[in-house]
Length: 493
Image 1 (tube, rainbow, N blue to C red):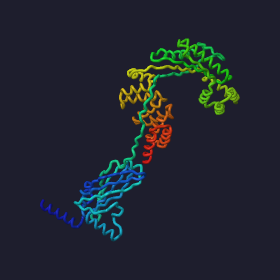
Image 2: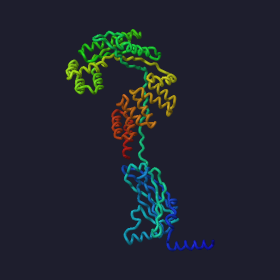
Image 3: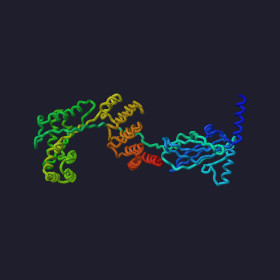
Image 4: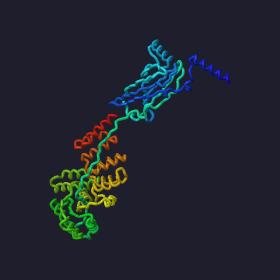
């Protein structure tokens, strides 16, 4: 045992005297002796400034070794990386070799390094590192590591590459703080609601007398009476008016159709008033005559109609003598065109629209909670928010109440904006966009601002910029800040 130990010592001594080092696989890494301090990585325009200090006080480099430290930016998901200029730390002998090489040939293996210096073991040493890189978007999802590569005597062997993390997030990009504040809904002092329906009664030619037994009139009249009774018998509602509007199709003269539409509307009002016993003073009747706007919609439902473009053109250009316009349609060839209009498209225009207008009483919290599930339209936005607040912000019930308000009142900017904000908080940005784009107050400043923010979060940056600029012009105080936030995001692309 003693002999084997002596032989081992002799062999090691011989290798040392010959300047031979251990194979690469047996070498020990130096990264454990390196500390990265005062690291600062900032983006300025299209450049990234990388600054840090390498503290190598604990690092021991053998005299024949050359240690090359590589800062490397590594993409979050494979493929891309960027190797920064290396720092070379030479042992005493290797430093002399590289200096001699430089003196004799004009170049050395340390050329291209950020810095090359001799490591004086046991002494405090630091390397101040500062480089500037061209910015690329993938860097935002990357990390910074420090790798080492060691070469030994006569650079005859090379170690495997070792690595240690420096920064798990290489670059912190601009983080926008978009402003979409809660919009306080206005107080609805008197809750006015209405229901609009259509009655398609059948009249004999040139008549405005109602015959309940004629065709489907009995069913239509029952529907009208039932609609009124539902409101009349609800103790929470008070009818303030019933408005009936009569419409006619274009055949015949304008004067005749105007009179006919009013007479038929009055006939319906008289019948329903008697049947429902609603005070006669609450009934209001008007006749508007020929419905050319409705005719266009009906024609569009029949794309196979012969010469449909000509028919639509006549309708669109009809802003004067409507009797003449109707004659122009009659004169189209073949005559089957007009016959189809008469048989298929004129019928739906002959109708009475009726609107039941009523006031709704105010409700307490428990009543409002129950109505929110069945008749949210009877609650004011303020009452719905009272229910939401009772559950607490952040709860599923709170979110659902806020979204119910937005769906129920698409013409209420506060309800729509607040509902969209809930959608965005839930991570449903596209749902927020749909809600805002589908509302009835698209040009409201607060709606435009919220839509711009939603588009920005959906990475539709050009669209977001255009909408936020419209919001700013419309008077949104938040839009200017959001445009600045958007500019910061776009600068990082």
